[in-house]
Every structure is written in C-alpha cells, then in structure tokens.
Amino acid sequence: RGDRVVALTHFSAWSEQIIAKKDLVFKIPKEMSFREAAVLPIAYLTAYILLFEIGNIKPNQTILFHSAGGGVGGK
Image (cartoon, rainbow, N blue to C red):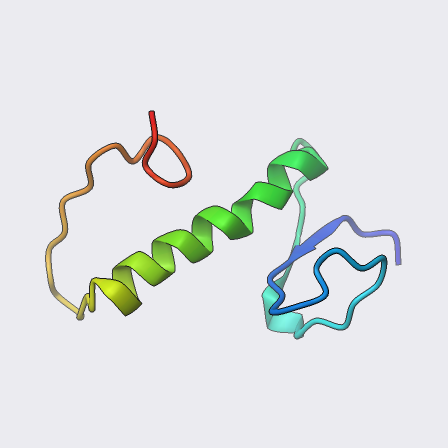
C-alpha cells in the first residue's frame, strides 16, 4: 500500500479501484508526476499497435522513425 503506480487496463480505467494483472502495473518514479505517468500507456499502446499489429514488424527488420518527439509523432 502507498506505492504510486500506473497500469495498463482493458476497461474500467476511470474507476477509483480496479483489478489489474501484476505484470501490467508499473511503479511511478518519485520525480514523475501522476499526469506524466498517465500519458505513458497511451504512447506505449499507440507505438505497439502501429509497429506490431498494423506494421507487422518482425525480428531483425529495420525501421525508420520520423517525428518521434511526441507520444504519437506530433511535433
């Protein structure tokens, strides 16, 4: 109890309490705000879906990133 965490969830993310798989729960570093931590799953899931589901990236393939400064490539 008392650890600040962020979790990847499928549903119920706006609930006050949820049940999440332990391998999808990550401790928030002391120097990171809750707001910053809340954005991480969005950037991660966007990148994952684009690379592995839409892009169908396979091991040992090369990829070139453009506009990788923002969470979804904006900036």
